[in-house]
Image (cartoon, rainbow, N blue to C red):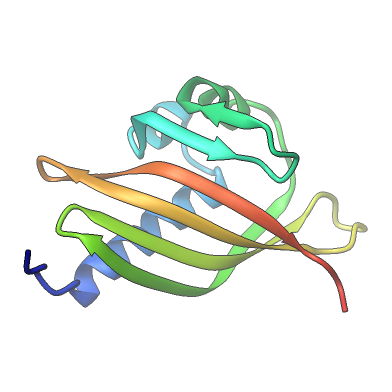
Length: 126
């Protein structure tokens, strides 16, 4: 089966959506539209999370500073994209920045892309 090429516009769109979730600056309602109903996350503690768990987390008053760098996208199928990047999370202004290697799978249904899978692996400081 031949895949359509992954356009730069699609890559930019998915990176922007990933950053919206990482930043957590929008309403819980807006951000929940970015997460597929069948979503699963495997946390760094090997705990599994679903969409309801993530929505609950999005509603907490977390004041951490979060960003992502080194984004890369790979087309898995015409409606599936693997997005990888490095996250930088600082829990308080005085705290050290924690890095993690992150992977998300985005699925297109109708005209909308939603995250269906996410995993983060802590990166140990050198």
